[in-house]
Structures are given as C-alpha cells and as structure tokens.
Length: 300
Image (tube, rainbow, N blue to C red):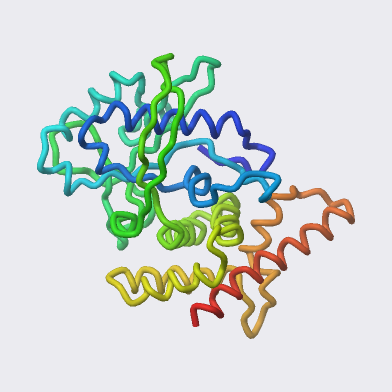
C-alpha cells in the first residue's frame, strides 16, 4: 500500500481510528498484550504529546505497525490462537495488489466505512535479509512475519503511554497502556526505513519527533550518547551514519540539498512550483538539515 506523498493525504479522523484499532487489539489480546510494541507512524502521537497550536500538526498515520516478541509467545499457547483472536476482534486478512491474502497484514472496518490496516510484525529481526521481506515462522499455522530490520531494539528501548479510545464494533470506551518505541529506537527504525524505502513520510516522522521532543535537543543527544554505550550501540551508530548521509552537509553537498530534507519539505509543503512555495520548501529543507546537524554535533 503506497503511502500518500504529501501531508494533505492524511487526516486526523484516520489517525484517531488507528488509535482505536490499537486499543481494540490490546483489549482483545488478554495477558499476552505485554509482548506487543508499537512502532511506525502512530508513535509520534505519543512521543510528542503537545498538540497544535503549541506545535505544528503531525501527519498522523494510515496504519498501525506493531512488533510482537516471539520469544515471549513461543512459551505460550496464545501464539497458536493469534489468528482466532484477531478474527474474534473483527479483523480479517488483507490482500496485496495481486489479490493474495497476507498473513501479516490484517484489516478491519470502522462504523463510518474506513478500512483500517494493522501491520502485524511478528518479529523476525534478521538484518542480513533485505527490509520488508516476509519470513516464515516455525509453526504449523498460517501466520508469517514481516521482517523489520533491527526492530528488536524496541524491546529494550521503549516507553509507556496510557491511551483511551472507543473500541471498534461499538463495544465501549477502553483505556489501555501501550508500549511504544522511545525517541532513540523510533529514530533508528525510521532512519533505516527511510534509507531502504525512500518514503517521504519516514523523513517527516523522524524530524518531527526530534524537533518537538518535549525534553529538548540536548536531552535527546544525551539519550543517544547513553544508548551508544549500551547493547544496541552498533545499530544506533549505523542509524546515525544514515542520518548524516541523508540529512547533513558533507564535503561535496550542503545538507539542505540532500534527499532527507527535500523529502521533509515536499511532504509537508507539497510540490507546487509557485515561487512562494519553493521558498518555503527551501527554508524547511534548511531547518530539517539543521536539526540533524545539531543533534549529531551534540552527540559528538
């Protein structure tokens, strides 16, 4: 499913519906919801709690990306009933463009007819395999996993947010605690995603969360420095190298001309050739590059 290339392809209502999908999922998974982690485009909603006009609007999301820790599920019977649980909650397997059902992508409809997509990333973290490849899992069942490189980082680098939303199917309002990527792991995963699939939305997501981090840039740099010395240091180092390559100035090219800042500006401001728009994009490109250069400079 190709993502919209500009911010105006997203809507607040769709993002709220995605939040409902997440809460419905957590509510229906019983004791093993503890092994579910949110990554992807819904995460900025919880990393940056402020809303307009205090901060600019984030694009939101059109799907819900979750990673499930198979190490935990391997010890339980719950794994084998995952499909049943999803069907009971009103989810069905989605189809790809060729009409083939996908075992890792599920969908459900809201009352107003919106088709909500749940990317069920049963973790197959194999970085040597190209990102986004489907991995067979050791089970007789029909569930397979979408490989998201380095996604296991979220098991160690995450935080909790309590969210309240109306369950799908008119089943009342529920409050659930969601485990989601923290700013360090989210930035890493988005850097790898942008590097591999070159979608503008990934660049918007990662810049937005760093730019509007409630604790400020110095604290963000401190968090990166701390984790660089930890068990995920090599993965974090690799993601920072991507940020440098995609967003920051080098001996040949000024940072604002790199594909990262251009993606941010075109996503947020559109592609109009009007002089005012071109000028606004150039300014936004410089801002996006500056955010990354400052972050890298402060990390040292």
